[in-house]
Length: 108
Image (cartoon, rainbow, N blue to C red):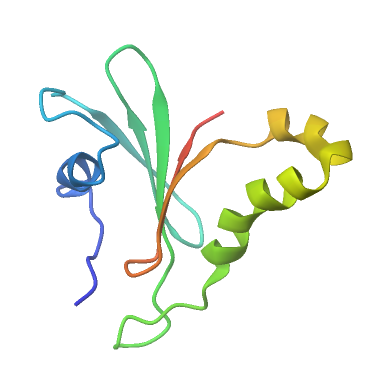
C-alpha cells in the first residue's frame, strides 16, 4: 500500500529517507496549495525542503507519473554541458520515491 503523505507523517518519512536526523525537532510545516500535495518543511537553521506527493487519479492510488520527468531533468542537464548554466535556477532534487509518488527537493 502506498503512503499517503501528511503533515503528521512527513517528519518520520524524511528520517526514514535519511534526509532528516531523528534529533531534529520542531520542524516548521506549511502546506502550499497546488495541484499536488505540497509541504514546505523548514529545518532548524533555515534550510527548506519541498516535499511533494503527486495526486492519485483513482482509488488504487495510481498517479500519472509526472514526477518521473521532473526527476530526470538533472541527468538531462549532465548530458548537455552547454545547458549547465540553467542548473542554478533549479532546485536540487534530493529524492524521488516512485512507489509513493513523492519528490523531495531543496526550496529556492
